[in-house]
Each structure stands twice: as structure tokens, then as C-alpha cells.
Image (cartoon, rainbow, N blue to C red):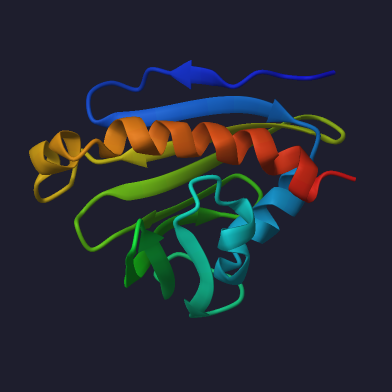
Length: 154
């Protein structure tokens, strides 16, 4: 059964999408908690395989990942702000915004996945909006969620 990605309204300055995927929550969480696998998850094309940090993230851990936006390459250090194995992982970025993943097992081999770009705490949220990050990240989230079964399903 093919599921569609849906827009989730979490209020102002949060971009969220949800999709049911045929992948176990534990398998998804293992990939999310391993920053060396983030480039496999990424549907935006901005995350590289260059990573410095632990192989299994826990709350309070930091990790640095290589990024690329257009021709500009840079490194971003993130801090894990919440980690509930098999359910939630969230990290904050230097500009004050956060990426959050919520996993809800529905049945064996079925997980409802919600990915959130939360820029309520961003230092300059108006600039993020002006530069199109909410729209761009919404598209990236949709691509990420649509590719999860292909990348992590049986």
C-alpha cells in the first residue's frame, strides 16, 4: 500500500510533514541516531557523508556534519536536544533552529514518521523566511519521507 506525505500544521515557524512508511521504527531510529547515515536519509541534497561525532547519538551529544547549499560547502555542529530511542530525536543548530523526527509504530513493519523543521527559536527567523528556507525545507522533507521505504525498507 502506497502512502502519501501530508502537511502537518504545527503553527507558525514550523514546517512539518508526515508519512506512514513500511519500515520498523527501530530501524529508522538507528539511522537517525547515527549521524554517519544522515546523508542516506537526506532528500534535500545538502547533507554530506563528512561527519565528526558519535555513531549513536544520545541527548546532550554534539556532532558536526558537512553540508552544501548550491556551490557553498560548510560544516554545521549540532546539539542533540531530545533522544527517546525508537520514538523521537531532535537536534539544534547554531542559528537556533531545530530538526525533529517523531516515530510512531502503527503495526509490525509500519511507522508513522513526522519530520519537523522548527525555526521558532532561530536567531533571525525573518531572514530564514526571506531566504526561502521554510519552502525549501518543506520540499526536502517531502523527498526525504518519500525515500525512506526505498532506503530502509526490507
